[in-house]
Length: 119
Image 1 (cartoon, one colour):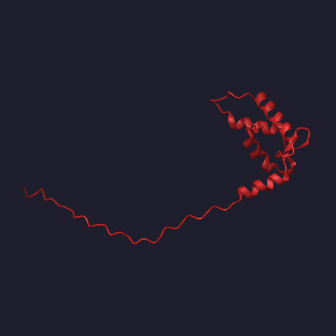
Image 2: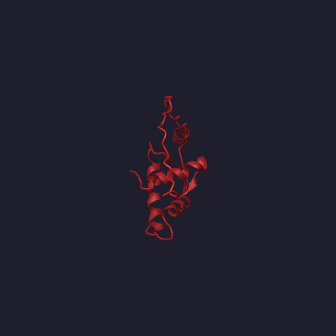
């Protein structure tokens, strides 16, 4: 079961490390990401209920990346965080170098100069 906000939950729980984060702080951050002055169709209580239930149910499963620390606090399991760090810290591939090409000589363009004073 994946939640719509799974990616945002992971993004906010990763920096908190083993200390974890309270559900209310996590929900407030995600709520602020998805609402603005013009679009306010997301309700805070519904979002809180959705995320808290998702974290609670996921923390009960062995394969879940989430771990329940104490009442209201969740973190990401350390073995999952290591795998994600390896994925994030990959070095960028080098740009493929183009084969050495000889510069093309463009034909010279003749400039036509008209002298309108003599006509």
